[in-house]
Length: 154
Image (cartoon, rainbow, N blue to C red):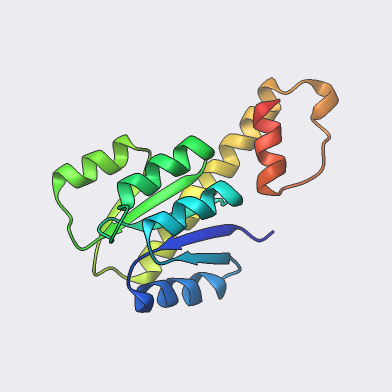
């Protein structure tokens, strides 16, 4: 099952590095070079996880997080930044980011964190499905983001 990821950073080298690293482990990765394009993408298509830079021209990472949470409250997000202050970390978490990572970072560490976040999400979904879904929908087939969103709505 391929997971969908959106990588948002104004630096092409960072976008390309993350796209390559996550594509190699099976993710389908889309890119945006600024917050405005990222917001348009999250409104057009579902993503399992968002990795966004904080400081970008136009809309910043906080605006991207807000938009992503409005469109899909269950989308997981990680903020990466070269401006790692306590205030920024608190604001990112308040807006729904699952982690706040200062640049520079190790790609392997980011991959580990993404894996952990998505595995926790899968376990919560399975547990919730076993405990509250009506019997008529417990046998639905599908693992796409749209199907998971539909199951959560049900």
